[in-house]
Image (cartoon, rainbow, N blue to C red):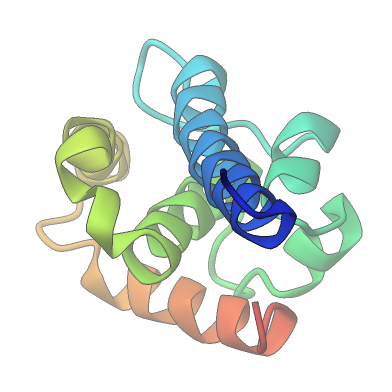
Length: 126
């Protein structure tokens, strides 16, 4: 017989995996064909933020909400889901390519660093 405690632990572990999987899948669904994410309610809720929080952390030199939303998603995946890299790395590559091509950058690292810092402040214990 399986104890009730063991059953609940197993069910909780399955639910956690499903939730994480859903996050990656939902991010893939929200990514525009061009490679970016829009700053909207669906995205903010998925990242456990509000659109106001997302906007308020945007660096002043970043004028396009899509750029900042995309940087936040990339940072979120890299920091919060590194163990799922094989599942999201192509999404991130497409997004990084969009950032660099759309804005004539050779390197998006400074923006991604800003996004990681913003997420650390907004989601410190998650």
